[in-house]
Length: 108
Image (tube, rainbow, N blue to C red; front, side, top):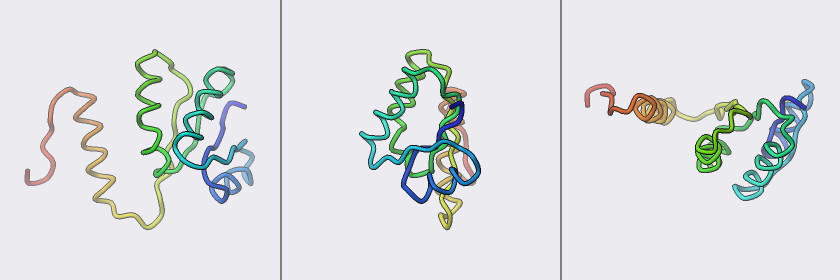
């Protein structure tokens, strides 16, 4: 169980089709509990989540980082049909946070 998909049934089913273990979760609380279980088992190296679920799990991911948990790594699958602007802004925020300085984005 080194790779596990978490998410809605269609998301998990699609990844199970290519051999990834999956667990269906509904909502942030259920997803956070599933992540905590995976961490406590210590067998999971990568958790694959949808972009929407990744946003809901942001607080849990931050908590794991503060605790010094290196695994699991989260692989985020972008939602289909979403505008690139939202992703670009989120990436900008993450890079700014990582380097500890507010970066310029576009014409700002």
